[in-house]
Length: 298
Image (tube, rainbow, N blue to C red):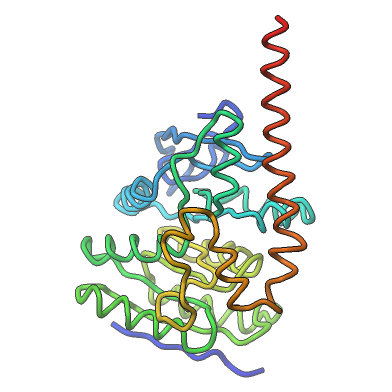
């Protein structure tokens, strides 16, 4: 198997209590000490916990945790996550372990409004890579880019470095295809990232691969924050143009991607995504109407 190229350069009642390190209450020990708890606002959409925060609040929380010596993991949930969660309970259970879960899809934001528990905004991995990096450069924190199509991690790192000259990019790595099934490749990858010890690790391998890998890496880097960013490296370096802002605001970014890659994405967006979105929003609306009808009868 071809070895990877490595580049190294210098409140809801149902929500689990979250510790100062962003861990569930059942895992609150760090170096033998119990840490104080932090209440973060939570909304539940189709049984999935989502933190009701803005992008600015998300970034602020992550860097406060880094200052406290606490690492974590961010999952940016979209419609495809909901589909996979319903099909694979093990994957759903894995992502439920994330320290921070934000809404990466507008349908989830719309559903939260319809059910009367509004999320403040959409928080995407493709936006967080910019805002977190800007904060990292300002605060003297380091980043590592893992995954992406061949060459995109290195190219994205160069773009981020150019925009933020003070930024510490400690390395990039594009794993070989199928590395998740090769224990030796996983061991090498883990060794490289652990040795460089970045503060932020952007993982662009798509789901569920990036989440499975993050789970393994977190054990070796308990003080780092991991963010699954999917195709974001390609967006950053310009290899794949991102949808214009107005399409993002209207929840039409999927349509832009469909036009770019119709053969690869038609099934995901048209066959799976649209019916799921209609079912999600319709189900929430019907449930809300039933609630109001029962309340009116009382």
